[in-house]
Structures are given as structure tokens and as C-alpha cells.
Image (cartoon, rainbow, N blue to C red; front, side, top):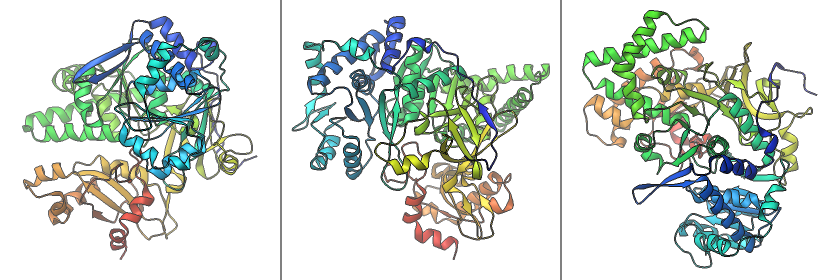
Length: 605
């Protein structure tokens, strides 16, 4: 039993919910169908127009797809893979698979063929749904390596030797599955719902097994912390292949009987926000940082009078937040100021995100506290949370009435969280997964002797129970001077600077910290009044001077040994397509270090 380290715990009380009647995710959906029948469940763009599907319509299509899958031989204990971007067929397949007692295996559309082969083979997938012929071709290239795979289904278009999604659904509609309702009603919380393969930066991905009970317990904890209701409207654009969007978006909305609209793409999010007018949205910090930077840049281009009003409004909003954090009543004068600023400034900012945000959620990486305070001042409450695939995923989140920027909030009520040896965050509770598929060695390493899951993250719990995540254990930089540096907070601070788009902080085993920086080249061009391309600008000494000023300002709050002493500019953004970012837009440090080895050597020459 572990006794070293800070062993303070938070949480532990059972979350209040109406879960007694819900034994599976399919049962959860059925409950919302009975309560919300004709309400919109999903919306999506088709030919430039928004289409919708009601809860009853969703249920009927799930039933038909399930019957079609049963005709392909899918039943209890089987695995069905799904390789697609977000679209209406995603939840149709997900619930159809689960209703048969089988488990859904999401596969990112961006993974290479060798990883597709590993995921399909390791999970024993019997059927795979691919979004289009291009992805079906990728599966076909490794099909001989996957003995379990019997059928490929293409959602959009056609591919040789593959079934069409419409055919599978129609076959189920024409010949309903006898006993289907009895089958899904027999599911229990202990039954496997999904196998999600971790998108780690090293080695082959591991299949985390999540049961219906794991995800339902997480939903109960989320609802107790940040309740949603049938009047809410969600905008979904993070990949459903990742557990964050799947639980906090898809399942959370369906639990409440709310409507979910799929954004057309990440590039159309600003436009879709104005069209859909969501009340709830989940995102990674990158989107909020970009929105923050875009607003700041627009203000900077305006007249000095407008800049003064804007800056005064933001400062007033931060002062209100400080009073609220200390539990103090906001002074009358400040309340009156905020009403004025709401008319002059903040109302326009809220209109840019649809005009009626109740709260947005940030997860997947660290949100810079200044960005959170910026949105909070404008009445757009960004609730930062924390979680992992293995915890279904949410471990902690801020609450509307007690947000604390710089932290990930308090643990969910039905979880026990402690700080173990080396400052590691450790978790126990009903939403912690049952282990990795066919990987006893990884399972043994994943848990402490007394049953806590080892997250691999370094963190602190304060006296009020707020959790702060410093970084990943494996990401900590140990300088040759003996100092430990957590790069994530530094990278988050740099990403908010006016002329910086992305930053990777380096220095493990070295004498000092350095950074690879991708400038925000569009903003740089405006500031300098030049039309040079990105590569030319990356070599321009004037750009280096701008970045140095931004770096000095952004890193002012860090200790001297934590601030990057040197930096090099990269001529292009790090992208998921080039294998440099995970699906939640975290940097794959090993890939970046290998790819820019020559550049890094210059920093330490």
C-alpha cells in the first residue's frame, strides 16, 4: 500500500441522480425518447441546409441499424469498429452496436494503416464502418492481417467488396430483429460498451475497456457538477472517436434530452456558432485561445478610444471575478460599470458565439487562466475540466457557482482523488475503466496496490479541494542543474501572446529551457506591414524581436530558470495531418523532437 506523497483526498460521496432506472447507455437513450420523443436529438448540414432528427426518429433508426447488424452476425460479446468523422451515422452505429450487447471500437480517420490493423486485430472487430471509400481502401490494405474482420460497411458512397450503410439499415427495417427490446433491456452496468484505443505518442495504442456503468457513473457525476437540461443546445465538433466529446458531448446531451448539432468542420465553427446558437459546447483550449487572439487583434486595429473602453471592460470583469472568488459581494459601482460594459462590449462578444452561451467546457490540455478570465468577463463561462480515456473521462471540473481559473475545479462527487508519490494524481471510483484489453502487464502498472488508477499526471489539491494539473510525469523537464520544469503552463502562456500561435518548450537534461515557436504569421504581417510569406518571415530579425517581446511578457510570472532562454521559429503550424498533434491537438513531443532535431541542436550549440 502506498503511503508516500501527499495523500489528501477529495470527493467520495455518491452523486445524486435518477439512475436507478438506467442500467445501460441504451436504456438511458430510451428514457430520453420516452420523455422527449418529438424533440430534436440531432442536427447537421446537408447541401447547405440544416436537417434534424427527433428522439423518436433516432430510436427507430438505431433499431433498424441494429437489426441490419444482427443479420451480419453481430451479437453479444462482438466488437464493431467505426472509422468516421462526426455525423449522424456515428450515434446510430454506436447505439445499434451496444443494443446488441456488442462493443463499439472507434478508430480515428487520421490513423495510418498499420495502426488500423493493430486496433482491428487486437479488438477482434467483426465489422467496420468507414465513412467513405478512401477509408475503406485503407482498411482493405491491411484486411489480410485481420482474421476477425468479416464485413466492411461504407457510410457514404461505394467501395468494392463493401456493403453500403443504407443497405444495412434498410435490411434491418425490412426484417426487424425479434427480441431486440428484450435483448437491450437485459444489458447491465457491468457489460462492455466500448474499447477506446489511447492515442499515446509512443508505442502501439492500448485498448481501454469502458463498461456501460463506467460511462453512466461519469454522466451522473457530470450532471451533479454541471447540470444540463432538455432546453440546452450543444454544438459538436471535437472528434467522437475521442472519449471527451463522446461522453461530455454525445452521451451528456442525450442524458438530458438536449439537441446536438454537428459543426461542418473545425474551420466553420465560428459560422456554425452563429447559426446554431449553442448553450453548451466542449472544446480544447486551442479554440478559445484563437478566439481570444482574434478579438484582441480586431480591437488593436480599432481607434484608441475603443481600445481604452475594451481594456477597461476586461479589467472590470476580472475585478468582479476576484470578488466572486473571495466570496465577497460585488460593489455597487462595479456592478453598474459591468452593466454599461455589457452594452458596449460584452454583448457583441457573446453574439459572436451565438448569443446565448450558458457555459462552454475546456479539456484535453491546460487552459491559460488569463484566457478563462477574459471569457468570464464577457459572460461566456468557460469551465475547465480534467480527465482521461481510462476515467470515462471526467475526473474534475469547475462549477458555475465556484469557478477557479488556473485549476481544473473539484473532483466529481462520486470519485476519490488523491495525490500520491511524486505528486501523481490518482483516482478511484465507478467511472474508472476495467483495464486494457489483453494487456496484463499494462494493467498491473496502471493501478496502485489499493486500487487507485495512476493517471501519470502531476498535480496538487488545495485546502478547498481544487485540483491543479501541473503536467504529465513523463513530460517534466529535469534540467542538468537539478531543477524540474513543467512545460505545459509555459506553453499555454506563450500560446496566448499576440504574435505566437504554438510553442513547444524543451530542456530535458540541458542547462536551460528553450522553445520552438510558431508565430501567428497573419498577425505578424499586420504588425510589420509586410507581405512576405511564412518561410521568409521565420528568418526575419524583426519577427524575432516581436516574439522576444511577447515571450518576455508572457513568461514574466515564471521563475527565471523556467523561462526559455533561447528560441527558434518554425515556418509552419504543427498539425494533426503531419502526425505532430494528437486528435485533441496536444503536441506529440517525441515526433516534434525527432523532426526538428537539427533546429534543437542549434538551441544548445
